[in-house]
Every structure is written in structure tokens, then in C-alpha cells.
Image 1 (cartoon, helix red, strand yellow):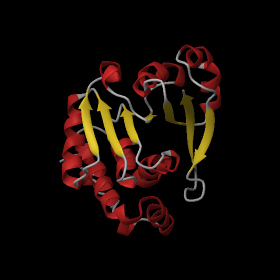
Image 2: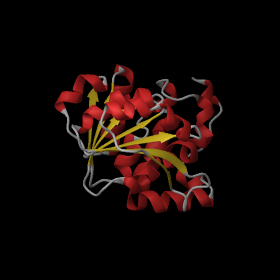
Image 3: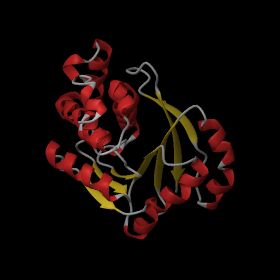
Image 4: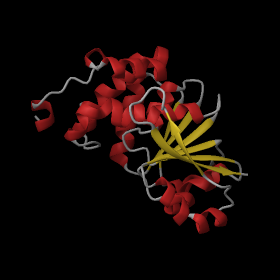
Amino acid sequence: MTEANDEFVDVSLTSASPETKLAVDAVFGDAAELADQYVRHLSTTGIEWGLLGPREVPRLWERHVLNCAVVEELIPQGALVADVGSGAGLPGLALAIARPESQFILIEPLERRVAWIDMVVDDLGLTNVDVVRARSEQVAGNLDVDIVTARAVSALKSLLPLTIPLLSGSGELLAIKGRSAPDEVVSAQKALKKYGCGQPEVLQAGADVLVEATTIVRVPVG
């Protein structure tokens, strides 16, 4: 048995703080139960499979799932979204739960992570998620999506060649970033020009429901 299971932390929605419950209800609505199931997976199988560290368990809702899910407010209805480097399904699965009318393609090169995502998608019964085991460069010529998302993949200037080709000349990159976002935009100017991008915006999502809003760099193309 792992140390994480020996020191059990109840991350179920019923045990969450009133502020977290309000945020979950605002972001996920009728899908709150599915979000709860996802968080349970992250806190158990996600740790066991090595996708997350045990120290992340107490802050799964606020730091990870809600932090990602609030990006849904920037995604148009019915959009086709590719999530690059999905890892533990962040942000791809969190967004797919929040936005059941949109279709999500989760792109992840590591076999173990893909197997875990497939297991969670099956357990949650998500019908709006496809999982592709590949590097984004390998599928760029076969996909044409409306939105590309990414979190904790690389700095913006290195992220652009991994994501912009998936848009086939039109769409947006929504990159979840931290406080360094403005500096990353400055450092990426040459790459932005090379890939035909418009001027990026540094935005805040979830400011009305989260204690700390999510910082996003939105890069338009076309």
C-alpha cells in the first residue's frame, strides 16, 4: 500500500469547503457528480499510477480541477478542442466534464498516462472524449480543431510549434500559465510571428468563483 493511501485524505465533494462546493456547482452544474468521480480517481489511481504526487491530493479541487475547468468560459459552444500533453487529464478531462456539448481530443505520448485516461473516460462514461497516443507533431497534419489547450507543457515560445499547427490556420491557443505569462509573451514574439499568430492576450478566468483566478494566454490564429 502506498504512503498516500496510508494517510488518506477525503477529497470527495461532500467533504469540500462551502466555497469549493459553490465553485464546483457554478463551473460543472449538473456534471458535478462526474467531476467528483474524476477527483476521486486523481486521488487514488492517479497517485498509484504515478501521474500526480501525494502532496497534491489536498488541493486537487482548487489547484488542479477547478483551475483548469474555468477555462471553459473561453471556449465557444460546440467547439472541437485538442488538449496537448494531457497527462492526468488536466485540463482536457476537466473541460470535457464541464462542457459535454463540445468534443475533446486528448493528445498524450506516454502509454501509461494514455491507459489511465482511457480507464477514467470509460468509468465516467464520457462520450465527448477521444484519446490519441502521440506527440502533437505526429498528428498535426491529421487534425483541424477550433481550440488547442495546454497546461504545464512548456514556455510559450516552445509551446507554439507544438500547438499552432493543430489549428490549420484558424482558431485559438488557450495556454494555462502562471505569473510569468506576460514575460513569456514578450519572449515568444519571434515564434508568434513565425507561426502567423495574432497578438496574445493575458486573461483571467474564474475570477468570480475562485479565490485565485486562472491565468491564460490566448493566442489567436487566422
